[in-house]
Length: 319
Ligand code: DGY
Image (cartoon, rainbow, N blue to C red; front, side, top):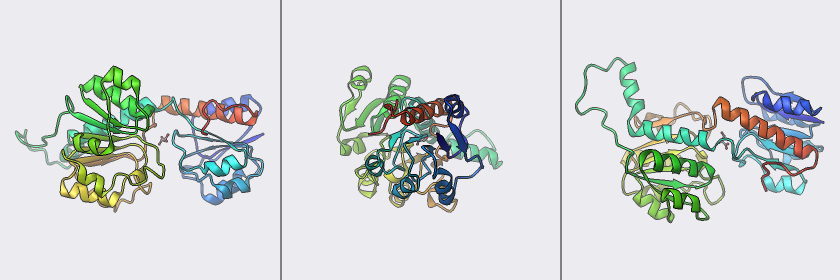
């Protein structure tokens, strides 16, 4: 059996697979695979460990007649055509229960950095502009006691809620399909409708999957409903935001700043108008990027592959 790993990931994956007698081929160059390379390398594989930058669609599945399982090296799976996989009996796995804390830590880092204007303050020091202590310079805003609106209360949203409620005494409002009893009982979190979240939050953190319902849900209408000029954080997917409208909202002061780990497209062009705002901090999709988490993700991806090859239920199967 042969498995393709489409980018360099921790060796835990390869160790697990080779330990079970699987032949592993890896794309190890320091650049994403081209589509042609993906189609060529995957064609006689039974399994693929894919990255969120790999489009796993009908064309690819047709080019890989022996494919049994795709293990996405991410919790999100909007790069995979699930219906096409289902039609062909190809199982799809992802990596939940590995990256929630790590991604929430990044969301919190962005939130704190934008709230305290760290990008501007660092640029000031770096550019030799720091001349004296300023009584009224770089005034930011506190987190303690403020209202956080969480859009998408899956495991990452809940981890964020916990950190903010426990660490900063923040009031947590959230939007989700179903109520989260644990967060409500333990943290006093309140489920609200989208408009209430927009109107009442001092900080908004996005943690939803990308679906037809969430596509560009943060658009002009949404930004216009924001009453408290919140700081806007997105560590989910770039496409949940209309970036032209986000740029406008920053210009008009509808929002006070933004911390984005995800953009559309990725990579974001250095010419993007978003980069011209002093109160915007953008990172290159590093939500799950810690040594510990990536090692755990690699192991889970390999376990998903093994189960798929053996015709068993995947430990983390996307249905
Ligand atoms: C995910 O897991 O979906 C993240 O975006 C990748 O780190």
